Image (cartoon, rainbow, N blue to C red):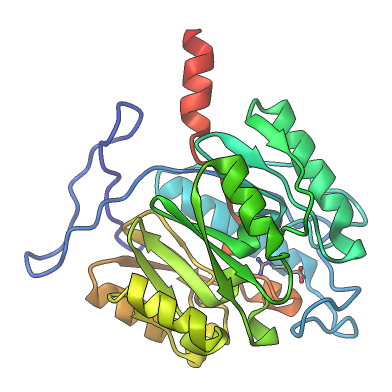
Length: 305
Ligand code: ARG
């Protein structure tokens, strides 16, 4: 088992542990998170709505299920909470639950899919938000593929457009969530969601593939994140940037070894997992992990009230 950085005691609900590493390395702080996941019970590739999907190529559902379970176990081992939503037959992409919403400070914004094939997923996840006490669950008016295109970096939200989410959904999200939303234009169909081209490492650090963005967006990213980790296509070919970080431990595809080395050099702890079966659908680790920010605080408030 790979060593993992400890969860920092930032509030009473988190555990304390020493962050390992030598003095030359930056001590990164892990924060315990709540993640929503959907088992790939009905996972399949039966239509093609992105460049990765080949309906004629069979999917190994047992392999998908064991990779998904290993990912969920990895999160639990790192001290995170994993909640699940029931999968629905006939919705083969529902495992990519991250595209179905965006939760900040316990406030939930649902999704509106571009393609008819995925449309019903948004309703199921929206119901889950309502049933589980999230604040002001709302369905957006404009096409909005949730955390597929919206990534929270500290106080700002980076939002992608070009293939899926409508640029008007960016202002809509800013209004609902009360955060600044920065628009980024995606230009390469292989990186059709923001989370295929950019990964959030902590509240002020990102990793990204510059070639996936328009020149203007690239300039903006350079200016906002001069210390960003610059990824190469050898890693993004495996959806290496579709990663999940708790601020110290970075769960990423085992094949993205070059990126893992870059992260180690920066004091992060790469936690490699094999999630390759999902590449057949153009999905990865982050696509399967919807972060419920502020969810634990909501429940604690409820228990005390
Ligand atoms: N087949 C799914 C689609 O094209 C994959 C979604 C993966 N999610 C993501 N955020 N990249 O919609």
